[in-house]
Image 1: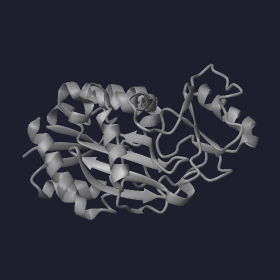
Image 2 (image 1 turned 120 degrees about the vertical axis):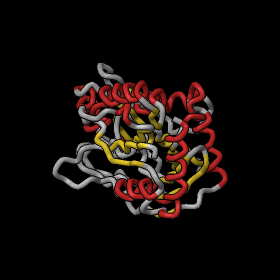
Image 3 (image 1 turned 45 degrees about the vertical axis):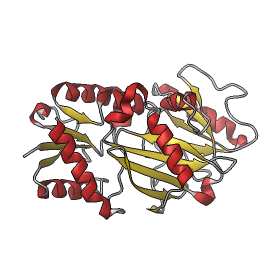
Length: 296
């Protein structure tokens, strides 16, 4: 009986936001695994007692990125962790978009402003809306959309992130997302599992520190051949052969100015799988998890 730890976050007194967690635990148990949900930062846990540590809804990691990646590396020394610790460290920092761009993957154009760097005349666009967000973030945390007239507010936003030691990202706002939405292509064991589409997350005038709905109006989606090709190119560009060791992946796409898909994010740490929206995918996920546990 393989022992599987499903790593999640501690919601405290509030209910968990992970709608898939209980379903996945029950399905793994029904398939013969000793599966349990475990808080990733619970110091009492003996991770070596598991055949596989499956990172799922560790959704507070972006506030504690150094602590989280150190935990992943400790787990990797004790047992098998998915996804692998080197992939987690690389993907937790959204500067990986620069690596994808260098590999020829179409990504949203991105500028980076590290702490101590004041936005210059060309860092914040003067002729179109733009987005400012941190390189360590999840669920649209510290993300906001601005018009050129809101430059001073955007500069203050950057300064606030710098005060917390965060590097800021500046990207053009892809206006086609207001029409065609954002598509999420999810892979398990290197194969396309299913896809979803959601509407725009960032509304004009919403403050960067306001709570946002991360997946508004989510619905099933049938990806186009071009979307699949871009997603597969992104996965192939994971450095040091990392793509071969991926148990799960999600590629978030939106249309650029020319209408072709661009990578917004490559989610390899703790992407929501949306199994509640795609219940037919559950058996395939369970089988992949069991194979990974057996391989350990």
